Image (cartoon, rainbow, N blue to C red; front, top):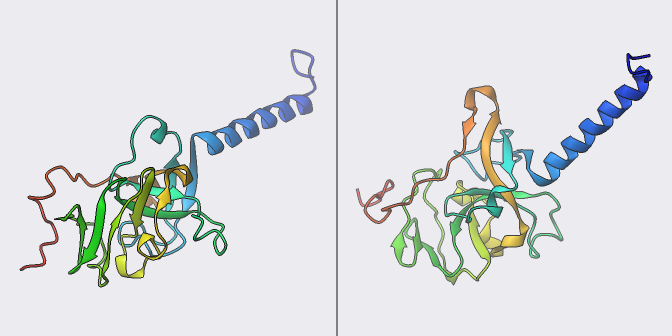
Length: 193
């Protein structure tokens, strides 16, 4: 018996129950761990990287270009896929997106992308991103099954934003989005040279 007269097994069961409810609540509403099963986000995310996904942040801030998001399969995907996808937001609602000459263009302006594996070797668009939807691409552009194959991601399917890599330990750190401020004048992948 404990000093309050309660059986230690009952106390242990209560502690376990409360812990389970808290863990489930945090995973359901706040944050959850995810792993990377494919090379579609190379070089940014390696196969088997483990990430923390922020599930509440988008209740307080807008989705930005460059965010790495986890989302449930779209209508075009759900017959074949049950697991969530992870990609980078490239096109925002209302924008015109094209891919040609190894570049992504947003509203006819080239997008500076220092995070991709190689330049895209395909032509896509022009397409206009519908309201409340996003165009997402993998950083491994030529090996990623993404929006240029199956379309846009509705906002309601976005689970959250990948914010921290916690495994492997040598790659531990935050996953920040690129700063696209002044992107017209800063082209980190100048293909003309």
